[in-house]
Amino acid sequence: MTNDHWDPENLPSQAGKTFVVTGGNAGIGYFISEQLAGVGARIILASRSEQKAEVAAASIRKYVPGATVDFVRLDLTSLASIRDAAGAIQKLGPIDGLINNAGITTGGRERKVTQDGLELIVGANAFGPFALTALALQALAPHGRVISQTSQATQVVKLDPGNLQSEHGTFSFFRAYGYSKHAVLAFAFELQRRLTAADSTVESLLAHPGIAIDLKSPRRPGIIDRGRPSDYITALYAQGKDRGAWPAVRAATDPNAAGGDYYGPRRRVAGPAVRIEATAPSASEEFGEEFWRQAEDATGIAFDLRA
Image 1 (cartoon, helix red, strand yellow):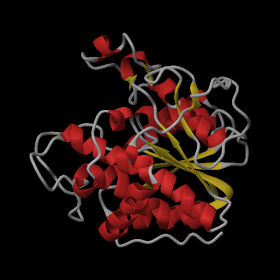
Image 2: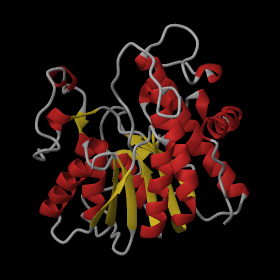
Image 3: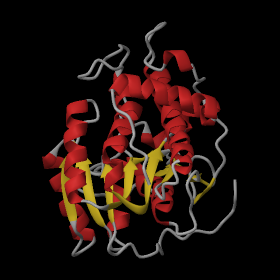
Image 4: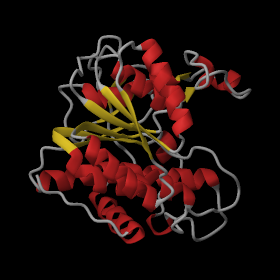
């Protein structure tokens, strides 16, 4: 981990740039969107609910007068929706950043599947972003960035490459979530290796938000209203979702960032966004290739990595 300085209150101008933020209507994704809009970026909120996106867009415009905010409907549990969203992004492009922030973070005790028969958690959190990135990649401007959002669950859940879709053994939501975040980490690094090999100027970077909760976040009516009871315990060491947005925002805007960089809170669960090292086994080339194979098989989608 490095101690490089980065001031989230003094971001470089993003005037003239466009960012797609999946899940930009709520939580960390909302604050990523608001912070980027605050330095002049045009924001495309990719969300399942147009109504919720409209609330988020109105809030962004309230706190960032004159902000430009568009909407694309996206359901990461549906490959048909992902294809439609990618087509809409192509029409709204070129884009300077695709921030794959959306994902499922809560669930029950039973294994469920997406509309296409994929295990729900890894389908929405990893295979969905893989498909969206593949289909929208050509919308990225030269030197555009793909930002993937992983989690420290990769430090707790042991990787099982042969069971990413939780087809074997008793189902556990937290284990499935951990598998999905191992997969996201693998995707980000493998994408960068393949972009480099293809001489593409597009870059793939990675971020994790630490532990970010509603209770410590600035209030945004209809978006962030109050915390859960459990937040009062977590608040002892966690940070707000506005600060949880910092690593992804830095990955998107730091002019000194480069493909393959990974950003997270300095104190692991909270703090300023700094470059960190990936220690999970999912960062390996071996698993990167394995995830890519599984993702292509699961989605039926391949990348066009031409520069």
